[in-house]
Image 1 (cartoon, rainbow, N blue to C red):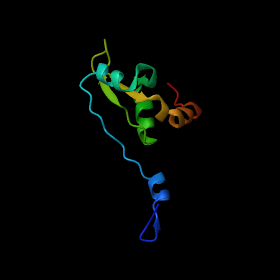
Image 2 (image 1 turned 120 degrees about the horizontal axis):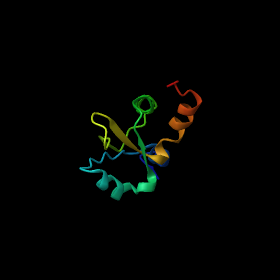
Image 3 (image 1 turned 180 degrees about the vertical axis):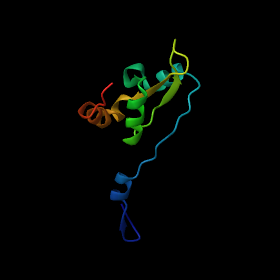
Length: 93
């Protein structure tokens, strides 16, 4: 598309808007994304590593049966690169 001498096709391809959804329950998140597309992560070191890679959880909730522990639910398609890097340099437990 040409307008005022500029080609906007390239700009449209590189521009995206991230929609931040706030869910009231895990069920709401599952209804939105589908259970098969969400990955639960309980390990805080892995959650922090994902954050350093720029991957943010879609839902965070207290882990069932464990007071004070959080489970972060991530969208599977957004974690591919971070998971690969996590496996390569996984810290010792």
